[in-house]
Amino acid sequence: MMWETLPQILTEVRILDVLEIAILYYVFYRLILLIRHTRAVQLIKGLVLLLAATVTSDALRLTTLHWLLSRAISALFIAIPLLFWPELRRGLEHLGRAKFFGKGFILQTTNDQTPLAMALAQAAGVLSKSSTGALIIIERESALSEYAETGVPIDAIVTPALLTNIFVPNTPLHDGAVIVRQGRLAAAGCYLPLSSNPDIEQELGTRHRAAIGLTEETDAVALVVSEETGSISLAEGGQLARHLDLLTLQARLETALGGGA
Image 1: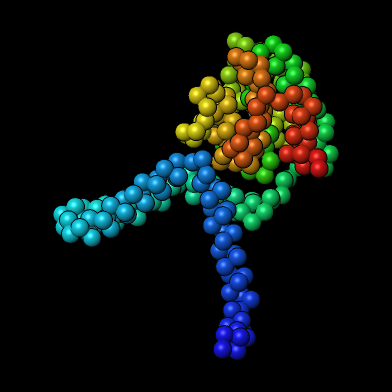
Image 2: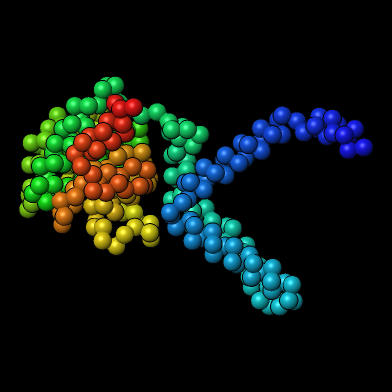
C-alpha cells in the first residue's frame, strides 16, 4: 500500500518547494551570521524569555501579570526597529554590497594590490619595532567619506615613510586613524566608531575597538599596531586577527584588497 502511494507523494513534493526551503534556510543562516557577536543576541534572548513568561502566566491564570507582559510585548514589537537599528543597517549594507548572498565585489582601481600591501606591511613593521600605536583603514566598496571628513585631508601616495611620520607620538595626527582610498592616503587624524561588542577582550584598547567597530559596519579593512606591545593586528568583517608577522600581514592584505588568491 505504501509503495503504491509513494509516486503520488513524490509528485506533490515539487522542486519549487524544495528550492523555497533551501532559500529560507540560507536566508536565516545569513541573518544569524549578521547578528552573531552583537547586542542583538542578548536582545533576542530577553525577548524569548519575555514570551515564555507571558505564555506561562497565561497557563497559570495570572491575569494581572499576563496583562502587563502582553502590553510589554506589544510595545517591544513597535520598538524592535529602533533596538535593532545597527544590525538592520549593517544587514542592508551587506545586501547593497551583494554580500548577503555571496562574497561581493571589491572595487579597486587596479588588479594588483601588491605595492599597496607591501607599503602598508613595511610601515607596520617600522611602527611595530618602536611600539608606535597606529590605525590604518583601507576603504573598499563602502564609502568612508563621513569618517574621512572628521580628519585632515591628505591625498598623497601611500609610502612607509609618510605613514610612520604621521603616527609619531605627540604630533597633531598621531591619535586618529588614517584612511586609504583607491590606493592613496585620503585623510589622517580621523575619528571612528567604537565597537559595542561585549565579547571583545578587555585588554584591547581604543584603536582595536575602533578597528572592530568600523569593520562591523563597513567592508573596510583595518590595520592596527599596538602602542603597548607593538603587535600587529588586522580587522575585517568585525573579526580581529592578532599577532601577525609581516609576511602573513602582507599576504592577508593582498587577499583582502583583491590582489591575492
